[in-house]
Image 1 (cartoon, rainbow, N blue to C red):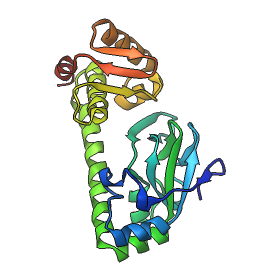
Image 2 (tube, helix red, strand yellow; image 1 turned 30 degrees about the vertical axis):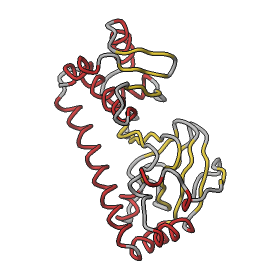
Image 3 (cartoon, rainbow, N blue to C red; image 1 turned 60 degrees about the vertical axis):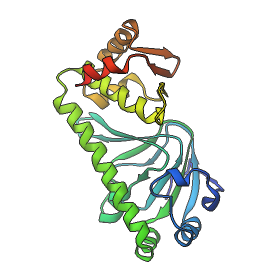
Image 4 (cartoon, rainbow, N blue to C red; image 1 turned 90 degrees about the vertical axis):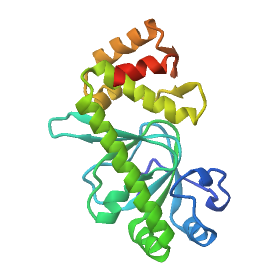
Length: 237
């Protein structure tokens, strides 16, 4: 079950204006009608764990609004951030399909709304609609690609500056949606960024300051604008 801090909300998946741009939710009328009747919508404030790693699987979640940090922590207390989930992403899908425990902790970075579906109901929904199974496979493929790209960035980039440049470019391109300007809101702390690129918080703070002085980026509060993506690309290569 979702944590007690979650608040139920009402939403209409049938008339959601965003579903056509989101992989999993873009279903035909029959599947969408069943999807609309499945589970419940919940709203979370920032900093709330939707589920935690190594806990028994209960629900699968579709992220409707907000962003969620997916992380794993070692027994020594070291945290690795694996992904920042965005609207349209499916959380806990791998664990639901395998029947295992959650592999990661999912923590909200900002006000967030999710659709929570009990495992057995979700599996029955997939079995009934072949289209849903295909979308689930595509979602898992996208998740694999994200993990692969992150692993490649960590393993092949020779410097922390290159890894940070690659990360900023990735987020800038995703936020641009094909437009020229790359602008996005940074919801992560410097400690979180350090956990994403395998370095220290002090190094991240120093590099962001240098990127700003070198006019590679512009920072206005939590907003970051990439001023010289071509130069960041060279650094990330």
